[in-house]
Length: 127
Image (cartoon, rainbow, N blue to C red; front, side, top):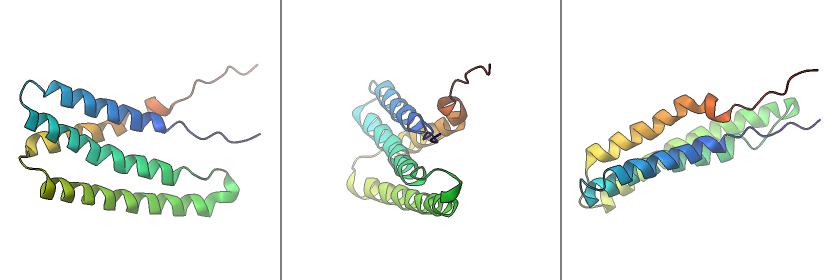
C-alpha cells in the first residue's frame, strides 16, 4: 500500500483565490490599492507554495530524517522568500499602499487556519 501525498496544494490555491478576490474588491478604491493588495497576497502565497513543494516531497517512516530536514529547509526558504518579496515590493513599486499590502498579507495568511478543512479527505466507511 502506497502512502498518498496530502492535498496541501489546496491551501495554496485557496490563498491565491483570496488574493485575487481581495484585489478585485479593492479595484473601485483605486489601482494603487488593487496592486498593493495583489502584491501582499503574492508575498504570502508564493513563499507558502515553495514551503509546500519543499516540505511534502517525502513520505513514509523510512524517510523520517528527510522529512524533518525538508520541513526545516522549506521553512527557512519560506522566510527568505517572504523577506525578499517585501524588499522587492518596497524598493520597486511606487506608489504603494501599505495598508492594502499588509492587510491582504495577513488575510491570506489566515487561510492557513483553515488548512485542516481544505486538506481533509473523505473517509471511506469501514466494512
